Image (cartoon, rainbow, N blue to C red; front, side, top):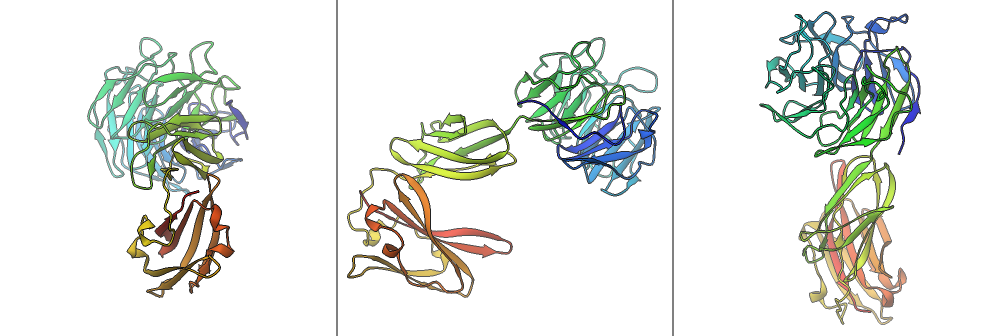
Length: 453
């Protein structure tokens, strides 16, 4: 993967604050420039930047946290304690933090923000932290190493302070558990003055840009355990700002009043557990999606990481089971739990009710099964209530699942499956009903008939 150049900001900015995601970002204030960006904010919608409401106070060296329509602007300027909140339209004053500071950093949501470090009014570095709960700022645990121009990911209950400057360019990071900080995995390269992307999470974090000479275009990724270098920025920068969820990143602005913006995607994670139709876990099943794969462990669990966003087929295979193929649109971390059908099940009489693997009475349907003189399978269904249902039949043929019939409406009619599909080639038929509850729906029933080859 590589960094992608995005639309320029309206104003050139450096030493500014930020909040939000890759496609819903907020740039806050700036050090003074010819374009007087110091008392403005602007938003990025994934395509372009546009000016937003002006903050009340004109500060640089500040920090920001939260999301585009619910963001905080914290301290800065001449060690001010002033803080503001943005509601998507305008800024308003909120409770002041306890200690005014510059070059501090913060992260989290607007009601679970962690702020730590920075330079205080006497010119020294502080190791103190503060937590914001949506109403007031309260003292948090102290960093083991005072630092400024660093990064922060996560929130008040699960945070991490990253790099920065002290006597040198820090490679250390410190994890925060809501009470105290403790040293965590080191960066690959000492870094300060960078942008952090990892809103409200310490599971995935990207830092990009660096004030360390000859490293201005570097970027590093944290997977929740260790740091690694990733692709370099197209343009070296520092005193920049960033947004994103840690799997995706946006870096914008920097010395000297840059307008340029770059985006990056690590990808998303897919996890799940594989079982069979009898609820037994399945180990050593191969799950693959595009060119990535994983084998399920003894508990049936699998994990595939760094999947780019997009539409995919998840394929699950095992020598003792039919292949499962599931279509998914990945735009965030996802979970999928395949249910596999054993190959060695053979029921000689498809009409014997003992062949019914599962029937959930909550479906509010009565079902009668017959074979007519043409050797077709008849399923006669009658409803017990007046709720609207959709009906579907799943056929497993040639090791692939395919929905061969669906019916939507108030009346469920008698269905002749043989007229829909060649019953002699079927391994499995699954009938299920969509039950609606408010704006949500789910499938119940799952009556399965199994037949040998």
